[in-house]
Length: 456
Image 1: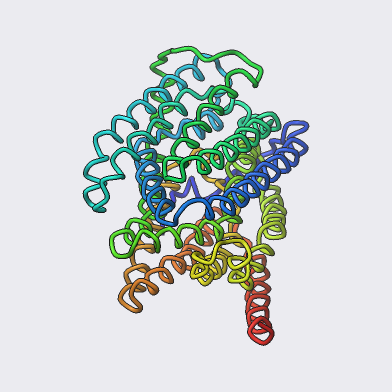
Image 2: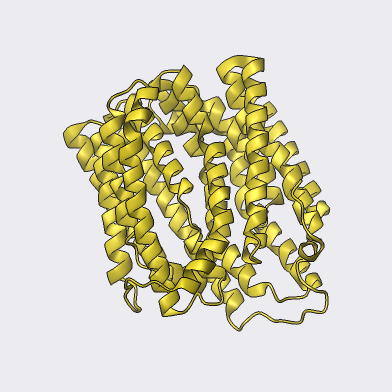
């Protein structure tokens, strides 16, 4: 388990008396509502897009884009400076010169990512024996250059948990992007429809971030102290994201080596459906809980434990029931929503939904990151990678490619123990809530599966 020093074990001194600023809880609730609205709208758009695109485009195109996205995510993570979290938790996060320096670093990083795409495209395509991946990686990599020019007004909005306008911008951009994707696919019916839509969406969001959010415009700047703070905090986030990439992307990378692109496409679509709930939870964690904890870190430990209990109960009430539905009726969901070529992914959807339940039950959001402990985030990611590799290879040895998929999904069960241990060391673990969430979930899924077997 991660080593936590004695000074880190107590989240806050018991005598701490800091109170949350006025309006903070109201802004948090409003921010949570906006986040769920944005994510729900995005998932509806994604669902509509998938329903249309799976009928316009062949599964191998989704397989190719799954590999391209893995490559781009990897390059992004290998160059992650943690600028967003740094701005949110820093005492200087509201200073103009600090923000301008962050924007300068962000732009430099975007250009670097594209250069890495150019350099790595051919070896990547050669490994997967698909020459088409070369132009796909290079052209899609331009989205990093465009995103690197996004305004820091987005970061400021998240810092202040004032994300209504940002939500509308993101949702509007996604609506136009989905429309563009369908239009491109109707005309070209090739993988380039997906690439062109990605570029279109990145440009829309970048322009909107500058012109549709009030506030000072960004300028090139270089503050040595700001760079030192940003890089110092972000170095552990960099290592964490590298490890997270290895964990999250290994399935597509391994399967892409041993099975057809069609099978990779089926797997990626099924996992995408299964991850809808978990991604919504992560959105709440990063956009609401993280800045909320950053502002509550001066509270006394007893008050913080009370808040943690309320947060966990709220998260379970919101996100666990949808996982029950997917765990029991995943095959019916796939049959209803997707073309017959994707129906083999039903069992994958059910499996990943079931294994996601413990992470929601025990999750409280990135509390230690809000306290400035980015090193623990990295250690947590390292443990996750070890568990992932061990469970994946155990599954591969036990049942071939199907066993590999089971092992990948099951690694989250081990992460429950890790998360609970970290919370215990910080003295904010509440085992009664774990027992409630896991016990009720097990009963619901088992009874639902048995009932489904009797009537379907």
